[in-house]
Amino acid sequence: MSNVNPLQLHASSAKPALRVAAKPEANIIYPRRKRRIKARSIAVLVFLSMAALFFCVPLYVLIVTSFKTMDQIREGAIFSLPHVWTLQPWDYAWNDACSGLTCTGLKAGFMNSVEILIPSLIASIAISSVTGYALAMWNVRWAGTFLFVLFLCAFVPFQIIMYPLIIITVNLGIYGSIWAVAFIHTILAMPVLTLIFRNYYKDIPADLIKAAIMDSGSFWRIFTEIILPMSGNIMIVVLIMQITSIWNDYLIGVTFGGLGAAPMTVNLANMVTVTTGTASYNSNMAAALLTAIPPLFIYFVLGKFFVQGISAGAIKG
Picture 1 (tube, rainbow, N blue to C red):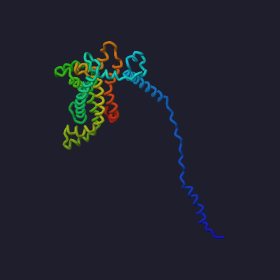
Picture 2: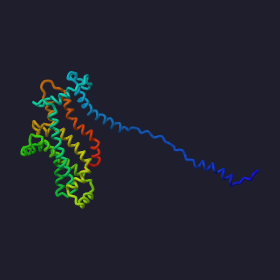
Picture 3: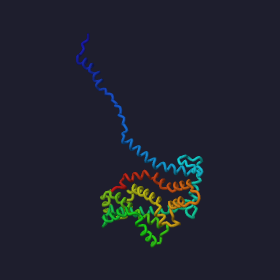
Picture 4: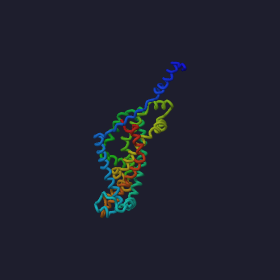
């Protein structure tokens, strides 16, 4: 019988134990607890669903009626789908509908609205952005008093200052034209837009402006080369706000536009309220949708940037 070294026997018997100890333990997966829907969440969902229906049902009726014939509309089933889908109400509203004594449809009012919108946007955004930049980044004398006056003007009803504005536009020789409507839109947008731009530019570090001044930066050079490239979000917010406000306005257009410069909303009101014979409900619905499509299109295209601009601090004090 061969002699066996006790140390070797101990080492050989210890190796399996070491291998077992070195083996990692299996990961234990615990089942995820199912989250229960709280009664508060159910109540919120029910309220939001009711609010959505409150706005969607009239829109559904508006869209469906615009594609119906007058014979089906007389049946009284306002929620039913059209038996025969027709685009004749849309064509009539755009080309042949009468606004007063003029029967050229909404296309003339559409062009007037576009001609009003472009100068109003350019003037209001350009002036308000420079004013907000000056109040936020430069030591302007009486800046606090000026901001207080702007804040008060933002809440003054238009009907109170309408007559003085009529006198001003008459003296300027622009009353009854597209320029008068654009001029009034620019004046009325100044207080709110200036406050929005001022609050946005207030978050820009003051050291950045000081460094630009030390590098021989002037007022306008700093604004065009530093401030404007940083204003993308706020510009989108203001752009959507102004397009919606100017395009959907009726009171300013009917007061300052006159007969030849009436915007699309004024033509729509004349179509709906002034009728001879049977009211064409399908054409009226189509005309309302044609008037609402441009601002809706702008919002759907730029809506994501609108939310980003608000999140970046566009409207905060």
